[in-house]
Image (cartoon, rainbow, N blue to C red; front, side, top):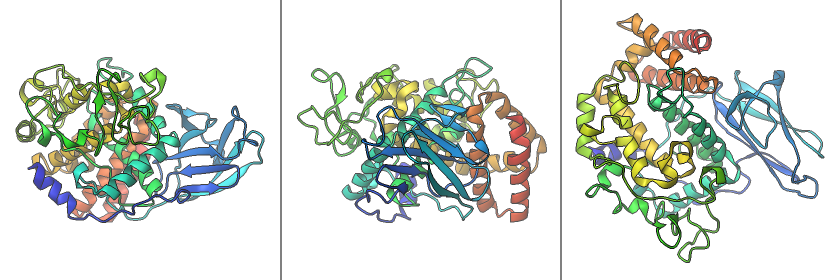
Length: 450
């Protein structure tokens, strides 16, 4: 089944260019600064902004950065939404379509003005392929794009948002994006936001984050034999000499004799940095799920989520795929985090490991398979209210009650927009109905509830 699913995705593969042009992805450049802004973004989706000083004689090390948007709009700054825009890296959500004026004020320089645009063009689906389905040139380009976003501090910006998502909501026993109904849609949207920035860095609007079909690699109760965890892809750790840091592959520590990477993939000191490490251990004998367990899960767990919508008590697809029904299905999502360990093993800083996105795009695959195979009409009924308008009300109330943190509000709005567009295409809903539902649900009802 895994092989068949992978084959369906590969059918639309196109070759990527083998190199990333140094300046192609910048929205503004001059002798003093380069500015990155996410491209091909729709209204209500976050645009990442990052300013990279080029002239240290004019931009001091302690220089201040102030982004200015129309109507003095606020930003997400260091994982705090509706915050000031005073930082080298921020993200901002534009509400309207078209050209958006932006100004950057750097102490010691004249104001810098430029324009970014939000779009309303047809969605071009990203082509996501399994890690091993990339040739050497394609893989090198992906790694280069990751380092571009790392140097721009965009990965660390998104990782800080993910770290904050562990904050418990009003129910106290789950995080805002873990342990409840938001788990899959929240991370699905996070992957898409990351993907848009990778596409900008690569100047490739169909590039998709590589996913790792790890269940096909399980040998015994571990993944050590997977080629994905070798120097060809994500690297291997050395236990005794280097304290579980990576010693080969593109994300290794440069002082290791076997490391050929020109720079070390860094982790903040507060997140057990300064470098990436992995332990390869598991906390339970059933930690890593098999393909057979996942297929059984898909067949048996046809309800997306159920009361009390918590990590350990719910019996549902979400609870099972997150890893809380491990006695029957293995730990699925949680099991890979637990087994990889190290940076990946702790929620607060797992996104600092590039393996995080290979794992979570595989979780997106499972989510998509659930929608198309297990209950193909479930989200159709929930989002559009067909054959049960009460489902719309119940679902909105659940999501609203679950997501008390303001930071999570826009992720839900973006996820719903993505699903509504997908359903519109699948079920041939008239564009008039689609626009009506989109306008009422996303722009009027949900902003009031969330």
